[in-house]
Length: 85
Image (cartoon, rainbow, N blue to C red):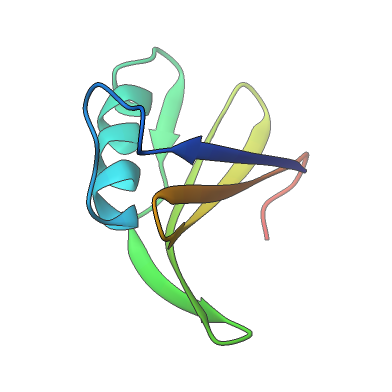
């Protein structure tokens, strides 16, 4: 698991919603040979917090990225596993 934060206050190209960040990420992943998008991005709620979710895979690994907005930050949880599910 990787947890990362992107500060929008200093960003050259600030985003307004987590879904925008996931959409940009989806387009970049789709351009990489061997990577596949499992399904369209969706919104999920975890413990009352709203996240944009994207599931994708490639080279034998399965990944999920969850991104939530918080004030001028985006927090992402990046999960990687060797098997689906």
